[in-house]
Image (cartoon, protein in one colour):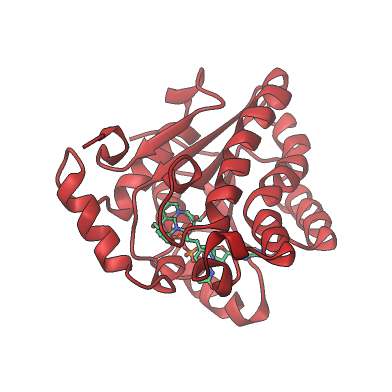
Length: 257
Ligand code: NAD
Ligand code: 0WE
């Protein structure tokens, strides 16, 4: 497994023990990294602090990605406490519930704004905050999480699909922008996993079943498998990889019929 000994990482998007970001945080910590976790609201602070306590010497900081002042304070805290940054994991997505159950054509202006702001623009603003800290360390690796609904239509994924398309394009533009500073930007497009974000989706179990039947590997993907792929993209093994969307979906995306 990738060696992240002595590396400093910021992980945004841990809500509970089933979060993909938490699986990545645990794997990165096991590989020797020191981790900063964030929480978006006081409601989730206790959850995140409890999980962070399982890590060695963690940093826990507030950050609602829709608030510029939170991002500025996050940058200042990281600069003070870490003095630099080697990697950033972005595992944040949100759309208002109504947008994931109404016909796509009914997408509201506000629903579109919120989904794109939280799920796509936040990668750009976090990258802007992280880049100067990564420069201090001679470069870095930025990783986000996306879903195939960016490229293909999945019933009810709706405006989240549009947000993920914007997120994936942002990965390429950021990779181009930050490459000269030795900062890489990539995404993992994961197959469906029953997390908090998935528990709000009606019919999620049938989505898992369809993937299990049709994917070449005839099974779903596990949190640890996404985390292992993340270790590759965060570590030196991927030092010449940037702007890439790596599908970790048991091969589902290659199937035509
Ligand atoms: P999750 O609910 O555990 O993670 C989503 C996170 O977004 C939560 O921690 C939540 O607190 C955070 N968040 C929402 N609004 C925020 C805000 N304003 N500021 C800061 N944080 C905010 O669910 P997950 O499945 O682990 O999702 C992580 C990422 O993985 C998402 O981008 C999701 O789209 C992506 N993904 C999930 C699946 C899946 O099937 N679970 C598949 C592919 C990709
Ligand atoms: O990105 C996601 C889901 C993200 C998400 C989930 C919720 C549920 C609760 C964003 N916003 C909200 N808002 C809420 O109020 N996934 C990749 C998981 C997912 O969601 C689907 C999927 C898959 C897979 C929705 C429809 C079809 C497939």
